Image (cartoon, rainbow, N blue to C red):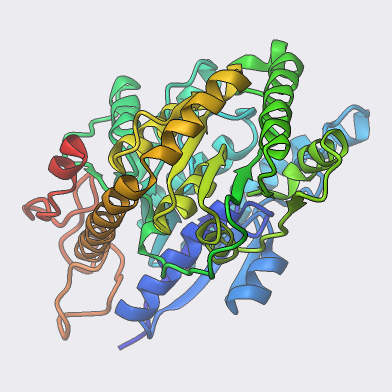
Length: 432
């Protein structure tokens, strides 16, 4: 019996710790349940993925300048040619796989600036190739949100429709896709895949230590006209908040979640010149968990900074920029501790922060319980994924065999006539 060939796809190895954390969760699952599988990636940073995870990796785009603004005629022509070449490159890569998994990430949203011919186009090529070539494509625990740009919305909608399996990391994501015209009646909701990762802790740091997770935040895709205004207001509010903590003698540890956040850290360090303010250089979600577990409290913007803080049981306040942050905080029992990243009010943020600290012992107990539930839900999600993508029982055929060798999946990746796996994820999400 041949080993299953499983592809993973996304902006992986590109400097975003959350994206790579989602990949780590899926690779750990595959290592447990399908140790014989041959795994390879089509991704943004193939060198980093190959070196770190020991799997074969292919560059997502033929044109190496894909994410640079093309202003000269030659660059514009090369980028256009790259879009055509990627049609055939993507199809050739998909043809080699039995199954392709898109591990988490906000692949169906535009809560950050996004062009339709960038990642949405790449995702559409993947899902269309999968449908045409008979390779199951699974969008696993992904994030989605309403999209204003018509071209981006169309590509995202068709990507979701063409996928063989879909599940979402929160209810607002599923509702966003339903509003776009995708049939989500049998799509599951479960916590972010990162909740399945081992929880890494470090000894508690200096008394009163606060971790502040920052972000190179300029608003979403629909905010391009006022991106700099949004960024300045966000940065000014965070600087005022950090300065207030330092004036009280509180140690502050700055955290990032993407390589692009470094200028924000530099701006804060320059504005608040104090030995009490230091910056971490995390290289993984495990590193982030060590930092957040050593703090008494956390204030963070990036989604996976929040997850790492909540996962370690540290009372956390979210500087949220999308519905996913609010949904996560509500799920974990901290829905009252959200503050808008677009309109940071340092005085109000301090009030919320002080209330958070007063309730810290109670909130730590709440987080311990919610983390247990979240881990169970992600385990159920992975069992559902296995049932959907590898429906043949042991000895009944090759794992991950292409449709046609056995009964094919329905529009949601389940074998003909198979009932929805009983994950109970939806019920738990609605009541958390």
